[in-house]
Image 1 (tube, rainbow, N blue to C red):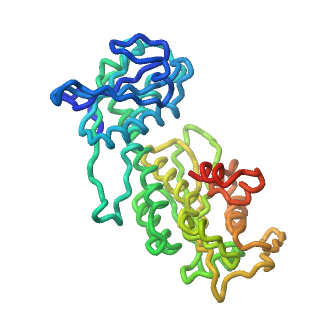
Image 2: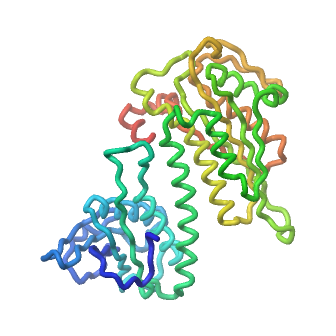
Image 3: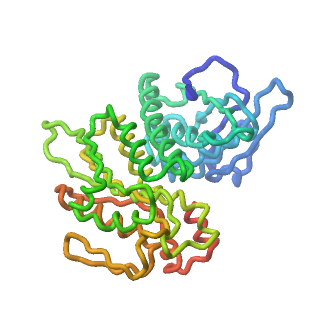
Amino acid sequence: MQISIDNSQTPDSIVYAVYEGEALSFRLTESRKKAQVLTWLYGRTNDEPDYLAAGMGESTKLTAEQVRRTGASVARALLKENKAQAALVRSSGKAGSSTSISMQEELQAWIEGFLYGLYQFNKHRVSTATTHTVSLQLRSDDWGGMTVAEIETVIAHASIRVKGTAWTRDLVNESPQTLNPEAFVEVVEKRFKDAPVKLHVYRGQELIDRQMNGLIAVGAGSKYAPALIEISYDGVSTERGEVPHIALIGKGITFDMGGMNVKIGRDISDARMDMGGAAAVVGAMEILVQQQAAVRVTALIAVADNLSGPDAILPSSVVHYPNGISVQVANTDGEGRLVIADALLHAATLDVNRVIDIATLTGNVGSAWALSSLEYGAMRE
């Protein structure tokens, strides 16, 4: 386990969470206490631990996301210095004091961020693969008002969220020859095989029968068949009564070459990541299931390749949808809206109250916002 409580082992580094305006036992300028500013203070000998001051900004403006990002930065800094074990010190001036977030939220954000920062994708690496990791010690006294059992519960919840997120990252990082549309379906089916969900995959004749013509058109250029994955989870007991039925829609273009409107060279390298929305949705469903969340959610994941080829949809082709709307495709690189339309129309048949769709940002949005290539690149990251 990478997170421990009151571990008796001596750490090789100590992480101090420091806040603006807070008195410390060591010298640190106020500028080094700003959010996400990290400062190493090295021990005088090899036998002394090194100290890492992690700037948190103003305690009254603290947010869970800020803590999460700081935790990730801390983990990466420890990895870079080849540390093995670190202890997190929540300063005495902060312990038990009121903040803008609860103590449980702060602790969970620290754990999530730290574990996110340790994430590595080494599946296809050989000589460059790294197995080094860092463990983090928590001091129960720093989290006054929380019992060890309560801290362990927070760690367990955070670990579930991190595992779901790590799976999402693994899917996005996977190579396109490994994770094609059919392979994506197989991975999801295997993952949820024994889970308390209802899973159905619409493909082949079912797509035709249900007139999911956006998926059919976009996937026509690939030898791998498109599909719509439906995962239904209902964690609500009858005693709780009615709760909103939410649909999560994910765009799963496992490789977006642009179709017949082929992308320019600089865009091709990231084309495998155009299934990021689908990966985020299945990761979210994994988290909901593992946490036994009291929600009712249906995930709809539209999976396809957008490639050029003899059977690929041509620019100016018309796609007809079952609600009577037809769309002329001026640019085949606008495939996302075509497949998401199928998922949205299907969601309308499921009596959902709310719909959330998640998809990678199209380059045309960057153009519409008049973003420079540098600004757009930052948004994509």
